[in-house]
Length: 193
Ligand code: AMP
Image (cartoon, rainbow, N blue to C red; front, side, top):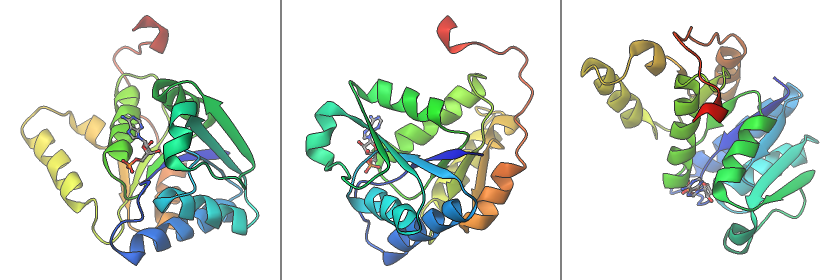
């Protein structure tokens, strides 16, 4: 994996563990010579993550829509900033630039990005690993809910299994390195939809 996209909160959250986890993940990426792709902001968990990668001498690419640059305070010190026209373009570019995806704690934006990239995997648009870094049990209820979706037969077990989970960056990255995407009955190209 050359580059990993990390989705995370534009807020810092209530617990110091969230920012600490961003720092630990940043250090783990640099230790493996993996570049960071993220939303380009200098605030919240996003800012802490970018700062951590830069502090260790790593590569950071931000992707931010022009209109959002005003609200989210773009990071001025990152390796490269791509300014795009829309949220849709941002998500597509983040996917293209990355070999895997991780969600750290975050709010609606983070959840939407995580579920979109999982949906793209389910449709066979990509076969890249998707991971959840569960910090201080933040995502425990989400994992339980996904198991409930499987039990209720609205989510197929092989698609539930696409979301890798760990509470430590090194363990999550190891799971992602060894990931094999499920075999699809029929793969659809994104251009077909
Ligand atoms: P949040 O987790 O809500 O703090 O947002 C984290 C990131 O997701 C920020 O960069 C937001 O700009 C972005 N975001 C917010 N809403 C959306 C959305 N509907 N689609 C994609 N990204 C979003």
